[in-house]
Amino acid sequence: MADRWQLLFDAAILVIILIGIWRFRDPRAASSGNLLVGLALFCALGIVIFRSPAQTPWIAGGALAVGALGGLSVARRVNMTQIPATIGFQNGAGGLASCLVSFVELSRGSAVSGIGEAAGVFALVVGAVTFSGSMVASGKLAGLVRQAPLAIRGHRGILAAGLAIALALGFGLMAASGSARAALAGGALLASLLCGILFSIRVGGADMPVLISLLNAWSGLSAGFCGVVMQSQVLTACGATVAASGLILTHAMCRAMNRSLAAVLLGGAYAPPPAGLREAPTAQPQDAGHGPGDGEGAAASDPFVRAAELIHAAANVIVVPGYGMALAHAQRSTVQLANRIRQLGKEVKFAVHPLAGRMPGHMHVLLAEAEIDPDLLFDLDEVNSEFAAADLAVVVGACDVVNPAASSVPGTPISGMPILEAQQAKGVVVCNLDDRPGYSGVDNPLYRDAKTVLLLGDAAETLARLMERVQ
Amino acid sequence: MGEMAVLIGVFAVTFAIGILLILRIPPRLHTPLMSMTNAVSGVTVVGAWLLLAAGGLGGLGLALALVAIVMGAFNLVGGFAVTGRMLRFFKKKESPHG
Image (tube, rainbow over all chains, first blue to last red):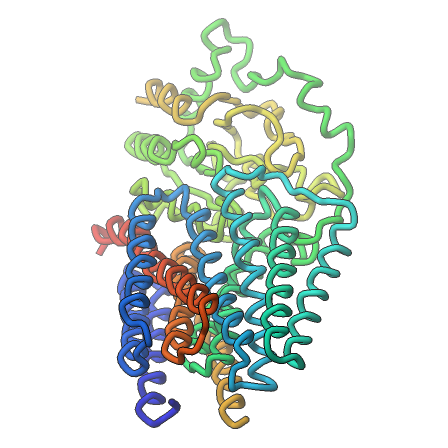
């Protein structure tokens, strides 16, 4: 199969894919990059279909059509808040495909041996872990499975043992023949599926961006190994590219949290938050509405009036969006409020924390859907020094990413995480569902700060009420 | 054995190029990037097709290969479609600024 033409086709397809990825440097060119990579892969598939006709072409073609139509209909229906769950699910589908291909190839006792067979075992194990892990992750992101991390007794030990059993059965198969091969491959498959589930239930809430990036890398890795066992250069090259991308995103997310990958995935790297800190919310509940301008009569005690006063008095405002904004479907209201404030002749910037969404870059997509002016968006490094000079920070549905406890209290899940320094602004308006801690479970002292005006309740409603007062 | 060495070389070289390219992609495009690379991993449908071309799979093997085709095609087509939708938002808002 590795004749000269095939080699040429493969090389051309690979170059086009790399050019397509390179176009993702620029938001305007990215769309054409996506088209380019898509076309290259459909050509690759077309060449394979043409050069290696399936023995049951109608059934195989039907399966292709069913998968493609299913993928299209899901892709058409989802909104941008559901993107992480959708990508998780698609990722799992890819992992399952790699895993099954390797399973069939290994259990029928293929022509490849040695390294090729070992690659097949890896593809089987990694693909199965990717599949079951992605299904759990996707379920968590879609709200079908409890989000909180779940650790069972001896979690790490069971996980390590499961992986060891899966690999032992897999490599054992290389020495076996006949029906024993299929049985061993099946055992390795089951053990790997179990490992994937154990792996994903351990991670939750704010750590999801790391999990989803890592699963992305693994689906690439298993496709690459699958390419080796099937002796397909295109498959191998594509898998390697995906693995590279997933690893870089995983690293970026870990850096954003300032935690090691092992600490995120296996837990246990921090002590639970001090008891006093957790009790803070109940300690002074009546303080929730306090803020500047307090004691200026009945009108001034209405937090909406005070928030509107702060907005009118400010010359420059920084908006901090968080995932709570997406949960409340308040992206459009937030962008509208920002536009209104700009119409009043004030400067507005959006400060986007890398962990503001449920996957890397998620917040940018959510705000893009709400038709934000992209010139208003700034990343953590670009904007963080400007809070000190800002008149007002408006926090919408964000908690952990603005929690000053990350730098002031040691031993919490977010200790050491770089935060957006909203507390340095002269005034702070927080729109949040409640004043309870965020996903990390660490109480947020910013909410009790004297300069903070808390607007509690559904962000979409809160912002609508605030808009009425900002003219 | 020569074939295997080539494949492992292909893996190593594209992995390295991938790292170099992707390090230069801005964080604001990380979601579309992951969505697109996720679609790329659906190329494993090629592997499933090669199984069906080789034949001699038996009942269970054939069924599993077909499931792999459905899953791979779902990932491939759905992935590019969803990435395209996402990137249209970026394009729409970018265009007035030229």
